[in-house]
Length: 383
Image (tube, rainbow, N blue to C red; front, side):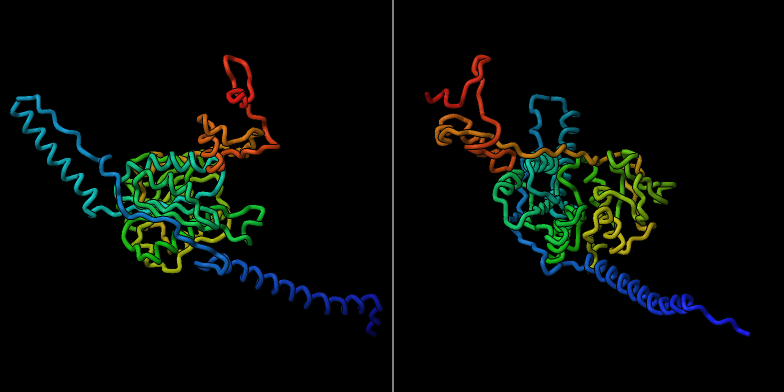
């Protein structure tokens, strides 16, 4: 005789019939939502993504930097003169190579954003790039409008350049861990495709990195993807490929995070010929995974990697970081036009235009001067 089922058991079975389908529905919705959200990371250009070419110059005005020093005419030693002439012709040939278009161009992409350290960082990097021939500098600024003050600093280096305004979409800016620099790099990738740049080398060089000039000579002839160590990264203070017998076999990085390509943004360069084989290659708005997903999107294989920097035994780029500080407000209650009679008028205006400080008549640290060890108000010179 079969025992009668209790009401509680029947109720539980009824609840299971309702709950189980509901849970399955939630799982499906979750998976679909995540898939859609994940795919939203990847389109090359989002509807609300902006790209404005602000300023551009394709003229290299740095030729004086590579001028050959005049040979001394005081010597009368025949053999020495012959040797010097040989060296002179060799230098002329090497110099001609730099400017006759035979060397691949390096397109270095530098994301930047408004902050008090922005201009010092750009100046420092620009001073380095001035010494790199056959280079086009793409500076992508995280702003919705063109920054004329930034352009005035970039163009004085004489480097062929493109300045972009490429703000991070607000939908990503609101995230707790915002993917900084992604919109800028994506804009640069779009510019490269838009301008049919299919020869040369692409390199992502941030404005707070420190570069050995040798790096640019090493990456210039990248065939597919070259990689090299980056100093001052993570808990190991280094991020590098692991190389044996001239081949990359793995990676040494303190943040694995299930990344196939655990490298720093400054630790690789890509041939534009190779990049052109992946017209949909892009970089996701996913903080921490930008490098990994970009390298996946170009179909990189381990055997394609070319180790540089003496088989990754040298450090040619460092991830130095300037300590960020809030721009101070300086209180100057007097007529600022009077300050134009001193150097302070032009100097403070220049700093304010760079975002290094702010001038206010009613708040902030009161501006003072020191004369013979005594503190004086700025009005001291006009009283």
